[in-house]
Length: 233
Image (cartoon, rainbow, N blue to C red; front, side, top):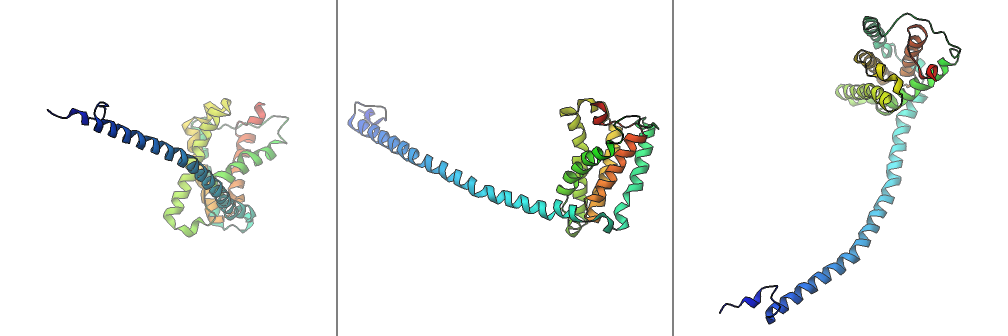
C-alpha cells in the first residue's frame, strides 16, 4: 500500500513526525534569528540616519553660502546693462494685458498706511520671494552651466513663482483668490518671473530682481489700483 505517512501533516507516521519536528525547529531557529537581527537592523538604520543628517545639513549650508548668500553680497551696481533687458518688455506686457483685462486702472492710493507700504512691500513679497525663487532655485553661477541649463533654471524658477500665487491664495490669503487665480494676472506674473530670473542669472546679484519686483508692486499698489494684504488688515 502507498505510504501516506510521509505527508508533512501526518503525525501518525514516524517519518511524518520527523519532518514536522524539523519544520518546527527551522521555524523556531528562523524566529530567533529574526528576533536577534531586527534590533541590529534598527540600530544600523538609526546610526545611518544620524550619520547622514549632518552631511545633508552641511550640503544645504554649502549650497546656500555659494548661491543665495553670494547673491546677497553681490552689489546691484555692478550689474551689466543687459541684466535689465527684459524689464521694458515686461512693462509692455503688464500694461497691455493689465489694462485690456481691467486688472489695472489709474487709481491713486489713499491710505494712512501709505508711508509704511514701501518698506513692507520691500520685505514681502519682493525680498523673500526673490530670495527663494531666484536666490535658491537658480545657482549663482548658472551662466557657467551652458545656455540649455540656464533656460531650464529660468523656466523652473518662473513656473514655481507662478504656481506659488494661487497656492498662496488658496492656503493662506483667501481674499486674494479672485485675483491670484485670474489667468491674465498669472500671465503678468509669468512675465515678471522671466524678467527677474534673467536679471539674476546675468547680474548674479539678488538685489537686481528684488529692485524689479519691488518697483513693480509699489507702482501697482500706489498708482494702478493694486491690492495689498496690509491694506486689508
